[in-house]
Length: 331
Image 1 (cartoon, rainbow, N blue to C red):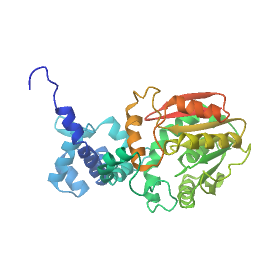
Image 2: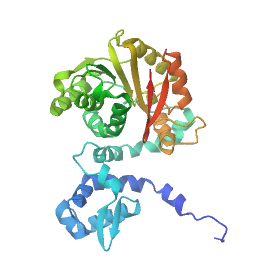
Image 3: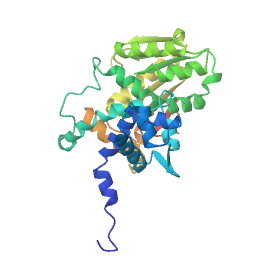
């Protein structure tokens, strides 16, 4: 390799990127980040605490240092700030269950080249069916992703001081928005529209949060279920638009506009890309998952959302950072 040639290290790291998924998922499975947070700082101590082989413990720690989730300081291991925040178990924002979930999805990537050729899934689509047997694991694992966005939205909308408001959460999954917003505003009430198996999970989780008495559910498919007319002050549509076609999103936004009271607000949370599709990085690569797993989904641009919402009857559309997602607020 001559001096003016770039290094192949970056390409090699990407080619072997599945190692990062595997190491992270294995570490989450054995609660490595939680043990480090509790004071474990060596491979032999981790092996004892996690009941794993010392060779395995050292290999995991080496891998976690490599991918930037664990630091080695004077011979002792510790979580990076990101790992300490998002990978320690039993916190509202813990992504450890999601890491374990995603390891099971890596096999589907072997189909991506053919999916790109034909322009859509080549196997049965399970993310769009009510009887997916894995809802319990999926719904609870992905809930933490929406915690930061729900908090940002509560601040943007001033929900804590909004008084007696009614909230509609379309496809609300775990009920994370309703839970956080009802905790912030003790006078608010929320209704979640989702499939019955998912609503059962949400009701249990919101009962555990102590706000279940102000939370109701509506069983059904949001494509066909009536949202009502002028019934709600706030509606939320989180991480659904990327699974839908432009026409479907316009249709749903139009019905949500009708469901809102005069002066009501719609909050859309999703992975939104810049208009020239130059970034942000995560929403850009997430489009591959939508190609692989949905019939018409993608990651849509800011202009797409603005145009759809204006067509649906909204007048004021603003964008707010909630990394790696974006909040789209329409009034």
